[in-house]
Image (tube, rainbow, N blue to C red; front, top):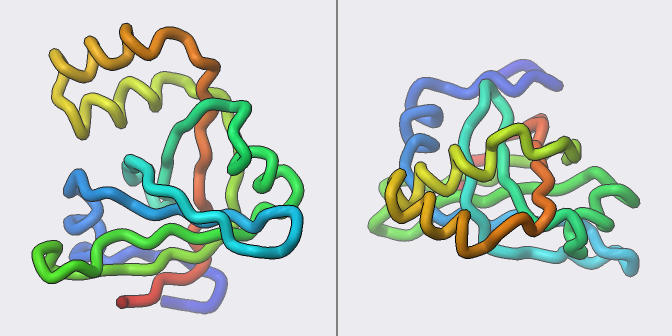
Length: 134
């Protein structure tokens, strides 16, 4: 991987197709990491998550876009990676449905999304700058 490029390997891409729980980190207003578990999907070289647009992680990203996502690392996962980069906030554009279906299947995912109602989702896209095997 060249400096500044996020060229994921085929092995990493294959690993990222699994519905594993990711841990995303933002930097809070006091400079400390704020880490929460999330569902994710890969979009090109970006890691995409979604959440309610009024959560702390969104306000952290607006103040400081630097962050990371850790995926895997448990013995049963077969691998683990730390992805460092910059967060970009976008409108949902159907990512909440795609990601929920990826984890819960279409039928149960549709039920969950209906139950959750319109909570005002936002997409958080990590523009990966560096990949570290953990």
